[in-house]
Length: 152
Image (cartoon, rainbow, N blue to C red):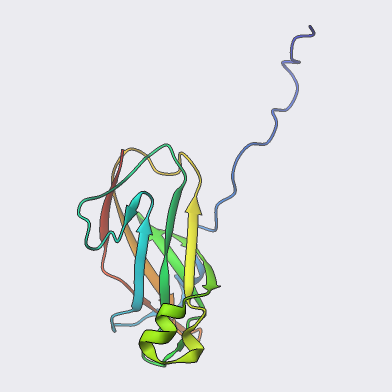
């Protein structure tokens, strides 16, 4: 067996995360409460009602829910999940028939979002998450109150 070449470049294994500054870095923060909800935070369903929210530190961590511009009654331009002051752009536009049915607004049928941080992205210990909803005008955003959780 040939030993590995000590001068060889290691294989790239890093997972690329969304930008730390996020899209909201240059937008105006609005004072209204966001029309958004965090359904899952890693291993915890409904982290607003399940306190303390706990998720494994060594596993991938999924954040998902829904969000829309409640003032305009329109879909958002995007969603960011802010973990410990780092904003990550979530996938937005997932089907949410429950939101459409509740609001009786067909335009809000695809207002779901999700973000998955890779294993090891969260260090063990306490953390804080907020959800930012980019307003339908694309010039401002709404931000949820902080939601505490623990990675262990």
